[in-house]
Image 1 (cartoon, rainbow, N blue to C red):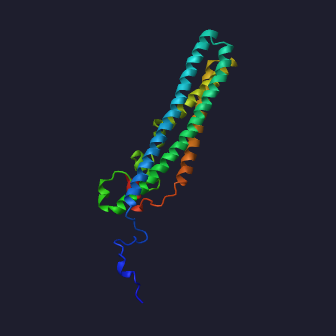
Image 2 (image 1 turned 45 degrees about the horizontal axis):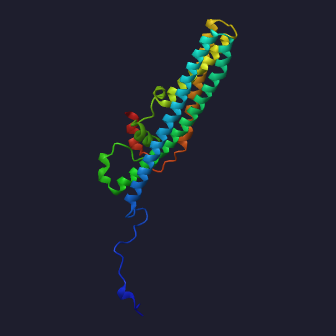
Image 3 (image 1 turned 90 degrees about the horizontal axis):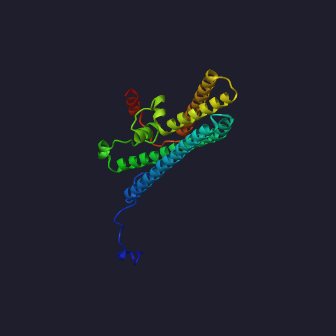
Length: 241
């Protein structure tokens, strides 16, 4: 028998999209998420600069305090005691700043990865626009690196010293060298021994930061878990450049 209400029903004007295809509201949703990730990256940069500014301000204030105490005590035992109390606190502040900067950089990499995935969806909607994109549509390490720092290959090791974490590591290592040098002055071991121990402490601290940072980069890279990796042909072309 016929359904008595069938004549009054209106057939749907648009069928549901097949599995694997983007729906009619996909562009609006993707755009909203893209702007959310941009806002998250802005907050990440703000926190990184704030933490670094706190460390630099504390270091500057400590240097001024040490200068005043040195003038008052003529670099005597009071100055040594004050320096060996104050400078380790500054070093600790630099250490935790480095740890937080590493976390912030990983957060930024995740947001860039999400934006690359959204960019991949954009190009599924309009593949003819691919020539106009200068950032990557792939969410592996190579794609994140291309979108975040405009580099097609992993930057050289010395590039780390021009970044904010690298600068903090160097400055904090100088503080470590100063702590060791002042301790040697307290023991009256002479200028040569003081400089040698201070240099060793500086290099040990800087080497420790470099070793730790390399391990963090490897761990965070393994956690990216890409779903749109760079095709082998493009990866080989990038490695040649």
